Image (spheres, rainbow, N blue to C red):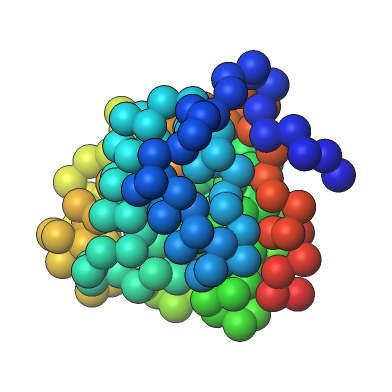
Length: 188
């Protein structure tokens, strides 16, 4: 489509620091691309490092949630918020991690349209409520997650992943962030 990353005119630091170049090379090696969100943040290395550290901690570190579950949360939040960047990028991750292209599409369009485990239904219903009406979260919502087998630590992780994607969706919308073209064809 386009090489455009955002609607803002923010040039990356030039030259990129060695650590950033190494990080981008690692992304390219593991993913086959450098995600545009990282390129977008490259105008300010401190902001890029903070964003990357939080993303890596929430999405890749040890958790009672699988990587697929965390990506599912991201896609459901992004679907509610109509975030094109995250739907495309993280929809590709759901397809890749699950090996199921239909799951990735369902997460993006309507997670309730497919058969999911009780665990995933509870997790995504909580995610949906937290995204749409956070002031309405109450003890019964957390108890529903516990009944579905989530620990209090897992509930913390669900809330943090959902909160992270709500933040990034808003940044992506405000800046008209474009997903990498390669995401559109991954795991199809």
